[in-house]
Image (tube, rainbow, N blue to C red; front, top):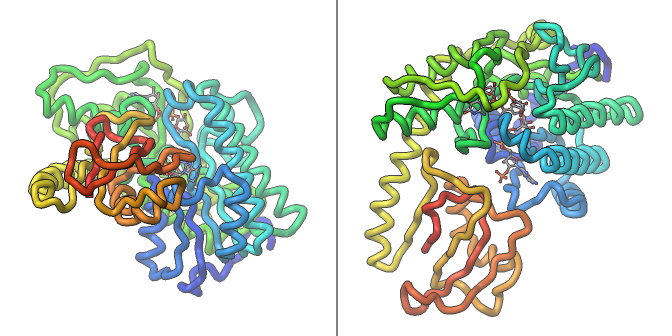
Length: 429
Ligand SMILES: NC(=O)C1=CN([C@@H]2O[C@H](COP(=O)(O)OP(=O)(O)OC[C@H]3O[C@@H](n4cnc5c(N)ncnc54)[C@H](OP(=O)(O)O)[C@@H]3O)[C@@H](O)[C@H]2O)C=CC1
Ligand SMILES: C[C@H]1O[C@H](OP(=O)(O)OP(=O)(O)OC[C@H]2O[C@@H](n3cnc4c(=O)[nH]c(N)nc43)[C@H](O)[C@@H]2O)[C@@H](O)[C@@H](O)C1=O
């Protein structure tokens, strides 16, 4: 297990090796799963947040004892843009420290052969030299809007290094630049700049609005990488890299937020004006990463920002259309007593937590409490998962008795959901 690290693992040779991709429903995790599946990997272990809460040490350790994966890629984390980082510092430091500590330690103790941790470019000092080399870590003060998240990510890198030094365990870390693509978070306030702007421009276009508000001054520079390129780099690193130092993963190209906003406006087809809300923070002035170490190993990014944005916008529109057709289907089914679904539209408003009411014939009051009910409701929960819902952390499904306002014989339960759409107050099947 040398350093500097041209060691090759057998990652790509055995396509039946068991791989746990943590966070497989997120932007990054879903892209990694797509990449692994396209390469023929057939033994992926996947657990949604509601199936396995990675902040719970006992549950995480029991999962590893039972599954014993050979490889682990950690793409589960509390993630958000500048506003979310600035507003929920406790969540960003505590949840990330908990998830990564549990997953790293259990992976090591249950014999995982190789482990990959994902950090972020925000680990570097606010005024780091540009492009930022890996060895700029811990050489200066962090950007205040995301220092809590950055401290957790730095701890993750250091934990991987410590386990490598003490136990010769093959844990590596990748530091991606700002990412975007399919399955991104389109929340109006808590998301990153790209999905936020794509949504805002789209809504403005649909509503014939004259202006769109963009945060900050427009002068900060950011480097963007399409998430499919990131997934490619993750698989490449699992195969080709085994070293103590983390690896920067970036496109090598930067753009001002002003030029980015103009590009998103063009891709979406909004024809009005931009208005800058300078009461919102700019964050780090510039964070272009030096990606020469990874490029030197033989990896290259392939997707241009324009192509990536066009694909992401097409995907989000397809998701919206799917929502519309499901809404029609839902009405027909409702009258026949079959399935009724309301699913989230990526461009509709969301709330962080909300209540979802599920009506069903198959609810059994005897098995009303706890997660047992979620197995009874397997069909429903799977469908919910498909459309991006997840159970509120620690939520107990409760059978509430006879459904008051739907069909005779139906029962309903009230579930607190994470990220439901505001319009999603009812789900029937
Ligand atoms: N997006 C970006 O621009 C960048 C991301 N990264 C890193 O990439 C990684 C993935 O980020 P990204 O895909 O964008 O984030 P997302 O928010 O899209 O996905 C995060 C995933 O983690 C899961 N998760 C969160 N909390 C828990 C928990 N307690 N237990 C189990 N699962 C949980 C989420 O599940 P659920 O949705 O059900 O809560 C979701 O599947 C992170 O480490 C992030 O730091 C690095 C640089 C930039
Ligand atoms: C990946 C990285 O992501 C976060 O850092 P960030 O790079 O600052 O990410 P951001 O995408 O939120 O903002 C980029 C820039 O864009 C501007 N901006 C304009 N208008 C909107 C807007 O509408 N939403 C957002 N979010 N930003 C906007 C915004 O003011 C800023 O100048 C970290 O907290 C941390 O999580 C991290 O590691």
